[in-house]
Amino acid sequence: MFLGIDIGGTRIKAGVVDRTGVVLRADAAPTPGYLAEFRAIVGGLASGLAAGLPVEGVGIGCCGIIRSSDTMVECLPGRMDYLEGRPLSEFVAASIPGETSVFADNDARAALSGEIMFGAARGKTNVLMLTLGSGVGGAILADGRIARGHADRAGHIGHLTVDPDGPFCLCGNRGCLETRFSARAIEIEAIAAIRRGCDSLLRARHESNPLSVTCADVFQYAAEGDIVARSIVEQAVKYLGGALAGLLHVLDPEIVIVGGQIADAGEALFSPLREDAGRRTRRLLGRAVPIVHAEVGDRSGVVGAASLAIRALQNSGATL
Image 1 (cartoon, rainbow, N blue to C red):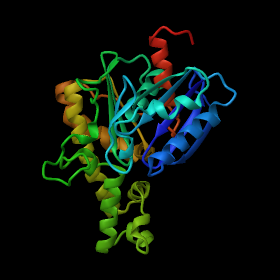
Image 2 (image 1 turned 90 degrees about the vertical axis):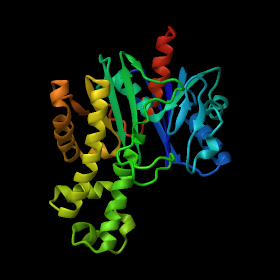
Image 3 (image 1 turned 120 degrees about the vertical axis):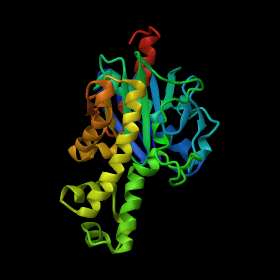
Image 4 (image 1 turned 30 degrees about the horizontal axis):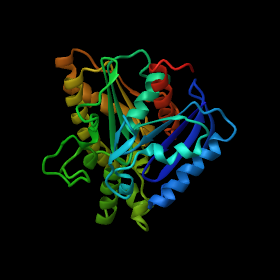
């Protein structure tokens, strides 16, 4: 059995996962704003889920820049910056009986690890993974190995510059991809349209509370034919398609895997994205690179997190 923990900006999710990727137990809690609360919540989730089970390893996926060699959080801007400079292993080690190995990585790399073991990346050697949610995450499988770069920071695709004079990003840059395509960016555009009084389903259904509109709402109204919502989606997908085209030219992957909450929009996202990226790259690449939905159906992220431990122990030659 393996324990997987996914640390997100709003929720901490954990689960016990077997070696076939099946979640046997699961629990979750809101992400707290203070270190002491975080320590208590993560420790409580770990000890409660692992009680009475032979846990062979723990995997932790976390947003931000995570040093995989020792689970250290190197950079995590925003409300969770209290984790910077701390190894994630310290929050679970005391909660698991015995000397259990703990592995950690960026959440997008954890998602790719899950796809390598149980999903669309099985048997592949060159894969690009995008995780589309409140931000944009990414991970790269190059020649059979997850790309890490010189300082273990490779893969932050959300911080590609797609609009040099665009909005400021939390990373300190301007016009990053996630400022133009992300759930947060799409919701900001929708709220602005509502407040401008644009005649649309957005206004009709959310005028009394513009902040209630979600990215999923925008995609839904676009699918229903709303012109304003469709315009917001088309503009966002154009930025994503342009960024993806550049990545396809640089990486030449066998396949692109797209996960995260926005991927749940289905063909409302995938159809225009495939068309845009294909149009921009087909001449040079000589083919349309498949763009597919993530196959690991675990929305919690715990399977990907657990796979960090499973793969690490397999690669070390440990008997599982």
